[in-house]
Length: 83
Image (tube, rainbow, N blue to C red; front, side, top):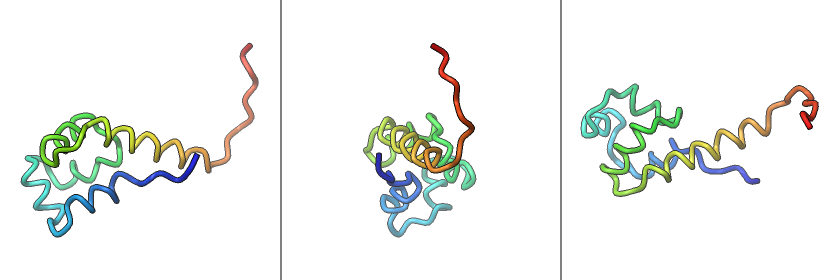
């Protein structure tokens, strides 16, 4: 596994010179809602798909990979196998 791109960083590349506030206005959401892409919202992924010509799956998969990578770096309690 490698450290995948954070969806927020990729989104900022798509937005280029557009501010988060302006992008939120164009998407018809609040600024806070746009910033919540970090939570992997399916609804936001669908809006980004429509607004940017990307796929909703791309945003959700990117978020999932980022979260898995981050979780793999944190210490976890030992697990006893169930089988």
